[in-house]
Image (tube, rainbow, N blue to C red; front, top):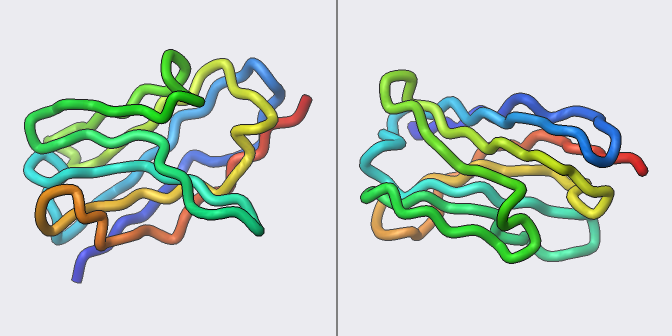
Length: 117
């Protein structure tokens, strides 16, 4: 079964950085559309960034220029480098994988990111 395990979350002050990792099994990060989403209690799930099979990246306007999505094909791991963090970035961050197109039908459990002002 597909497994996505996120790590790297934590608490940081505004302006700081964190790097999230998503270790994937039974799905290949280099040949599937992968993405990062975030969720705040009481709000819907928000798309943060995605990387397609061809390496094309797409970011939410709210994180553009601050976050970078990347992948390590040898380690079959997806990353999200988050710089210049803001309190409004506080959320549970989830990794997602796709079985076709960018369907994002596989999900990890999430990792908490808390940014204090």
